[in-house]
Length: 206
Image 1 (tube, rainbow, N blue to C red):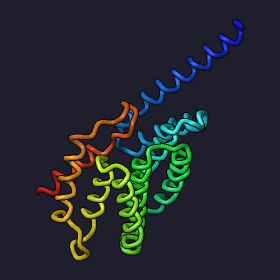
Image 2 (image 1 turned 30 degrees about the horizontal axis):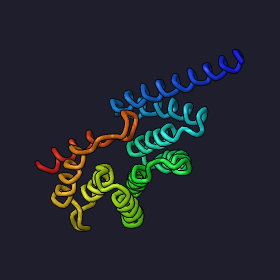
Image 3 (image 1 turned 90 degrees about the horizontal axis):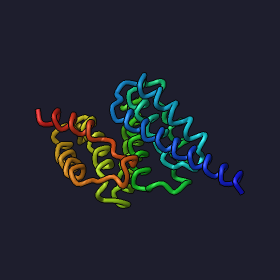
Image 4 (image 1 turned 30 degrees about the vertical axis):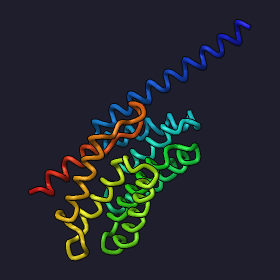
């Protein structure tokens, strides 16, 4: 009996340590900007995700970090990072993770894919990104992230194709209101995007 209790205690301790490590990495991720920092964090999240296959947050954050890397990567590397992200995003979905957040991340992923070749991918990939964003909003209208990703798409679309700063500004302002009222379910829960929003709002108002 004592041995069984000891094993249970050790397992619980291991779970707590794993959660603490995940929380620590999420805090670091909030402050990471360049791809060198992001790659190191992606490696850490991936280790947790592989060790804890049923940890949907670990799967989600691995995917999110790889999308962040893809968004800043050179054109010839974007697809490979997006593929890596999608691998873990699918795992998060299979584990029943928040569908509004996973759809918002898919919207971000396809937004990154556009950068490989905006002229040839803008229409198709942009449309897919928008569709995922709409799904995310339908699942949770209070989630600010799909509004942000939609605003980014409009912001970087040339004026001649219906985009630009002026068209993006109302969507950015709507996203800003959503961020003001958004409260994550837990400190670990997805809460990214405020920094991107602040930058684009400032630029759009110039």
